[in-house]
Length: 135
Image (tube, rainbow, N blue to C red):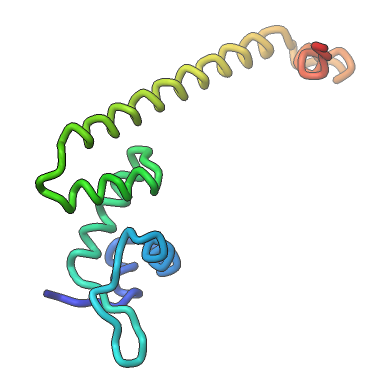
């Protein structure tokens, strides 16, 4: 097993050393050992776990969800159905956010169509709509 310091591991995986310490506090990674002077020394597994974390984050998983995925990954006898359910829940969340973003886009496009972009702000239909008191 190859070991590396926190700085070397951070450079290899492309994260800040502070991020590694944070992940350690959350229990996502653990040093293989500490030197006599107290330095963290990590093994190959830490680099693999960090790459897993980064890929999962890129797909939108939260650190809490990633902890669940890591626990499932660490247990080869765990149910793949749990992984599928977590992933499907993330897909559903993303679809809901896309619908919300599309609704916001439509609202903004509607406002933008009503504004010529000329004149004074006192006559701006965008600001008028934002200032409108509904209740």
